[in-house]
Amino acid sequence: MDYSEVSILLVEDDDIDAKAVERGFKKLKFANPIIRAKNGLDALAILRDTSTLPRPYLILLDLNMPIMGVEFLKEIRQDSKLRDSIIFVLTTSSADQDVVAAYNENIAGYIVKSDVKAGFDKVIKLLDCYWRVVMLPK
Image 1 (cartoon, rainbow, N blue to C red):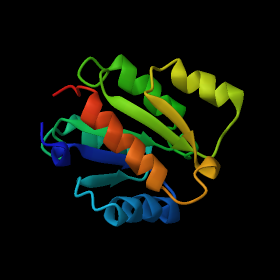
Image 2: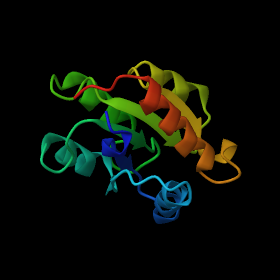
Image 3: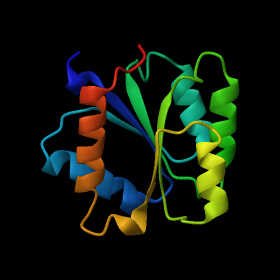
């Protein structure tokens, strides 16, 4: 698989955090397409339109959004066509109940934004290692 073909669906309502993720990809010279949804409802619409976001893809999800954070995870896992989506949570919450709720919905990883002090480079490198080693559903 050509790993530059892995698209990223960034579900993030904060413009500054979204730009930081995009800068991280550019800084590390990754050309992966990034599609942004500002809330879970928009993300579901994008995912259900396979021409907008073809497989393979990874989802970076902010849990703390006014419209569908954790609810987005539950909806994805109940949808037979989307339940195998690979989701990494990238959020401000380090609350145990959020971590547990997210892992109960079979996420691939939980990353707290404040733990990524030097920018999103580490997150981007983690994703790069992940999609180079792990087979992604098509």
